[in-house]
Image: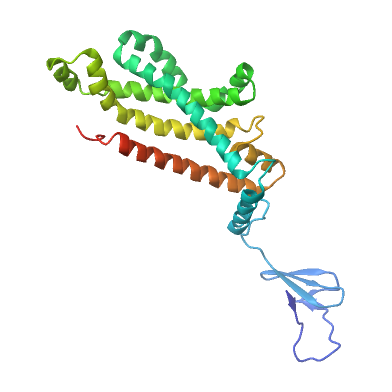
Length: 280
């Protein structure tokens, strides 16, 4: 900001100091709340302190991030559109979750209904449950490679143990009096399973599904950091290599929004498909 040295002293005035500090053309002096620089022609330029402002390379303004979002939504990034990046991430998550559910739910039912199956598989499930999926990335790469198979297997493992435990907990939590009542009315084992055990275990399974989808969505972003050509995680890691903070922040926000949207959809599905949840 250019400032005038004097207002009424007329022409030919020469500034030799600012706030008691000597100054010459193309020199600067520190003053309260800023810095004063004298230009080559003798005029003064005041630059206020930035205070607690952060450099754009570290944290950009919301306007800059929003502008970058519209730019990538229109022109794409790294040879793919924004929607292709997000779509591929969602497709991987759904594939891993479905496979994990197809294996985990029957295994959980078997563990809940059979002491023999529970004795064999419970130690394995409880051992693998606390292992974070990201810790399995090196092993999955060795076994299945770095392409789509490896990523889906990693997501499958992320969902498998959660769905197994949810199904086992659902079966174990069925009120035994309902089972006895069904048998006393002449129900067969198949009928007890389909009309008593499955309906009463579905609330626990849906709770596990919500958790599993959240874990898979968080895992796919990390999985895409390794040799992915498209995906939300790939977009973030590629942008970070070139210090494109606006794209990194935009990707993080989109991941959070989509993850929240997935959870809302799972809640709505649970409300529609399991209306008896919470009722004895």
